[in-house]
Image 1 (tube, helix red, strand yellow):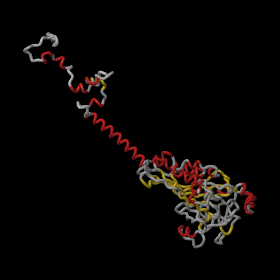
Image 2 (spheres, one colour; image 1 turned 90 degrees about the vertical axis):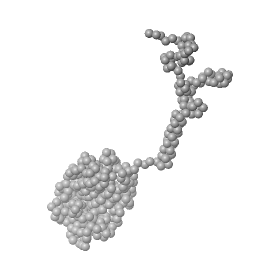
Image 3 (cartoon, helix red, strand yellow; image 1 turned 180 degrees about the horizontal axis):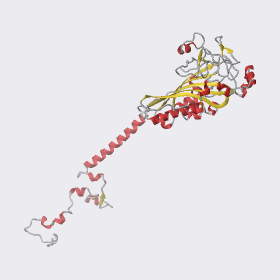
Image 4 (cartoon, helix red, strand yellow; image 1 turned 90 degrees about the horizontal axis):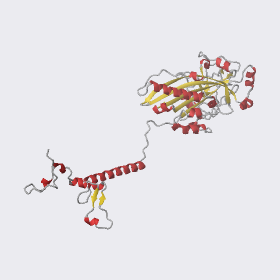
Length: 435
């Protein structure tokens, strides 16, 4: 095998091809072309530059200089990189400027509405019957009602176009929790707490709720009794913690992604006068009733019709948006303010002002007659017939005798009373409703 000779040790061939004859193929691969030289990170200074004092022999070339042409101007790659950096900086600056000028606010699918409350006091036609809790309930439709949360039952569940059956059950469960906390909690009823109700509300309604809880009365828009059931201090206290409850829950998808639950429940409380009110307001009829075996207890009935709205976020957070509240409560004097707390008329007392319409809070929603701004409390026995008259029977406002046995008083509608719409127009007492 022949070994290539060193071109530098060889004698030039006078008949050869010149310079190329001194190079073999293996040395051709180490020849530096112009592109390789321009890309080098070290560059030798020119002779003039090396003549300076303490001048260096070579200089480092930056990344930008690698793309320079022979004339010293930036090359194509350098120009493209510079343009890209400028574009990124301009885009970032524009984004910051637009964000400061027009801050983005995430749109809400459904705007939360404020609660609209209608509070209708129902006045008795005569003295409020008194007795023991068992005796009063035995002659009242509430005798067959369930006790406490057991009276709030869920309906048959079906899925809607945009909610599964599990989500529907969740909405109904939240509605039931709200009814339990706002109608049955002893601390809420006594006016000593409101947080159990507050934590179940949509955050956008908390401001109105807080203002309602702190209201001093006179503003139906801030009616605390629209949010919950509570008794005004010094008026009445619970004589029996077992509250009788009956009602219905219904649901419907009113818009894509919006579920609505409507509750209609009657709550029957056994109350007696507060200690301060008992000494100042005890009547002769009340004293006689107590002598006959009464413990001074009486029934107080509250009919609540609530409309609640839920979206998917509400179901996850277990909260409700309370839209409307239609409340009837009695026996309650129509002249007494019902917004900050109910003022039940206790055994042996009577109302100073009554309404024109007889309203039965125990009747079904399709059968009962809606009262106006103030109604007359009218109830019937368990079989649907008027209750038998007791020894404390009194004359009604229409001049006929109204039965007033152990249960709540029965009062007939005054002559000429028409449908619910005309009864509302004929009401002569101060408005207890929110337009």
